[in-house]
Length: 159
Image (cartoon, rainbow, N blue to C red; front, top):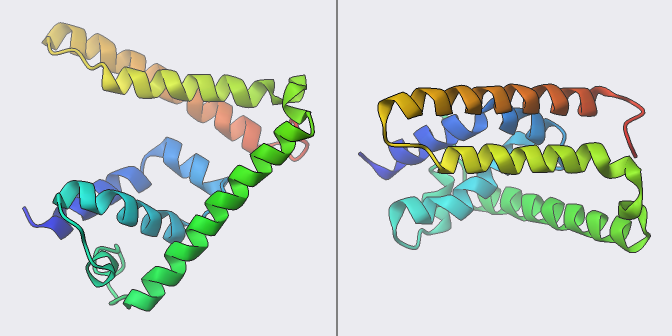
């Protein structure tokens, strides 16, 4: 399988994941910025070699050819948004907002996300256990989706 096919399949899977959709919709990143950041970070892991930015630009899901400059501008914007988000979290922590119970719903979701990721990483090998495990993962995913939608749809959220 060619690198582009592998990256395209992985990106489509990741970007169409219902949890990723909810998180991305409420993040500082546009869909294009998230896609570009994922390509930059993960394409070299898939290819096992250092890729040039022209090669990374060619991995974008769009049918139109993307220039290296356009890819780099979008990558720069995505990195800046990630850094701004981290500074926001640091600022709120410094000001003592994280000591407030208003963050409890977010912390509960963070713990549920951790549980979901661990469940995916600890998939059993045996067929009978696998079906039960997949049911548990589905339950956790549904709880996460419901919680994230509820939290993101409230105009007067916890903060």
